Image (cartoon, rainbow, N blue to C red; front, side, top):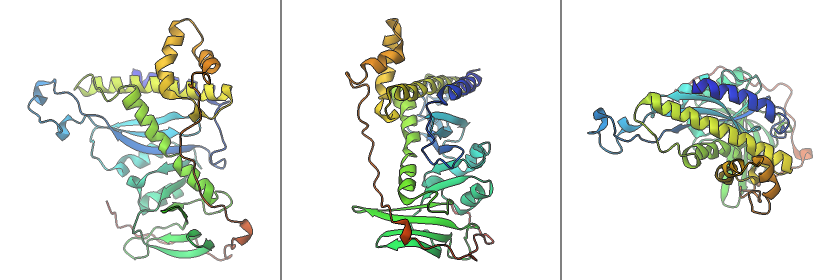
Length: 334
């Protein structure tokens, strides 16, 4: 049904977008994806069984969506429906990424943070980048670079015997204004992924949050038509199909106009493309032609990412006998 149609359209759009997708984002990775979940908004109390349920009750939540978002193509890569809205994110995480090409890079928020998860990704030949959770213990293995608050180091996650990761990871730290930023990654070669690129890359994790906003706010998925799960899922897949096409158009318009995709207003596309089509005009051509004049195409308001770029000559090479793996112990913290 609609899920199969979504998958078919996604395959066609992937071919169409090949010329417009950018490999400048972590070029060493097969694909670059953001992983996250969003809870569907509560349903109206139409069904007799729900009429006595108080507003805000968990029983009014129809579930949530686990999603992978392709950052290079700005397309939904994988969507899975989860019936339990409060299920821990980590439960579905491995299934979500298990069909990705080897050496894909996964970005995820702190809801996925866990030594066992990081080790599993590494052992499956996936790259990953994460923020470092507060109060996470670690042991220093090697310092590539250290100057003030700026550090680029190799560490063991877990300083205590009860909870230790198997694989050494890289920790980068730097300060911008009052904010201290700390990221970890299994890309352990600094020149493969410099500090500035880690910061820029992780900032792009926000793309999936904007894509969720497109679904819920601009395409009105927050207004569920029914309290029945089967009907809700049809609405979800229909909305995803529309979003997938619009996000592909955004990429194509940006490519043809020679601008960054985030300079093309997706909200205005949703509002005006149907009108261009209704008037008998090529909607993409019209958007490109009049885009700058009416500010459909305008400078992006996204935050400019700042981070240090230390001189490579100041980096210390790894000792030749350094061990990158040890026996793990997992505490299975929530």
